[in-house]
Image 1: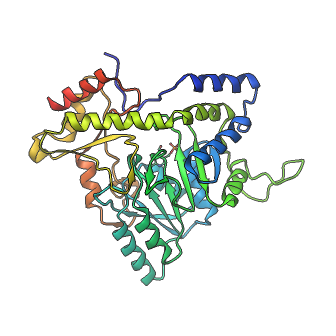
Image 2: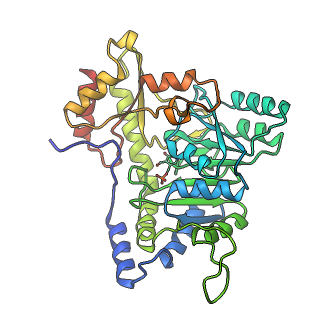
Length: 371
Ligand SMILES: Cc1ncc(COP(=O)(O)O)c(C=O)c1O
């Protein structure tokens, strides 16, 4: 049996045609017509008016923090339940992350804990310089409550929407809620360019500045003139061509991932002690990954037992992100709460969720989980 992957790339004829067109045009550079068009089309999709294509989602987070002036000695509050890239970017600028636990409705940052931590920081006269909120597994955080907690002290929010392209919150697209938002086109995401990212912002000043910083901060001059430290973070025109093709089928990909989720929910509904990542009332999740929770005291098996049973049949499943406050590299950092995300990690398993997953592959996954 061929291996079933967690979330493999899903390419179509448009992506191939656009890539070949880019190749034949000889715009084989980190700039070109496909980069410009990808930015325009992405901005149109998300309805956030400015977009800057970058080499990764991590690069987008890094530049967003730099542009907000976050640096050495600053604190940044962020979600503990995330991939390391979120917290790593905070450390790149010399700042210190404080980790906020998840709520149970969406597993995203708990707005009450965030508000409480901001008040505590205010009392200590040590307000955070920024808050980085993660939209986990294709679902937006509760932005009304998060933004109101931050607005009280005028703390800027960066949205880490790397996993949430296509999601909505109260009718608006993921990426619309912070001063800036970062998306990822890493190989496992709902659409991919192999590797890549996008920074979006309501204020075009940020994307203009991001373009400057992402091209080694080259000042306008015929020679190479530099008055700032820059980075090499732009997206290749070849990859932008692939991204344009992927963007055309994004809504289909959301439908396919949601169909996987609906299938798993129905097929596993009767198993006591097995529950699913909830879809919160405030919006549409893309169900980028379908995630189950296993209560070992009821099921009699742990999520690791199930993961290993799937692995033995060449099926890739992954534990939920290990929270940042439990990572050795961040063990000295402050954490606000932490028991909810720790439990989600202990019990959580991401099932194969690719948009090209076939009915027989889904049946196989379900059969093994049930057994
Ligand atoms: C929540 C989150 N943030 C940031 C990233 C980083 O994106 P990239 O891999 O494009 O650098 C990822 C995924 O890779 C992610 O899942």
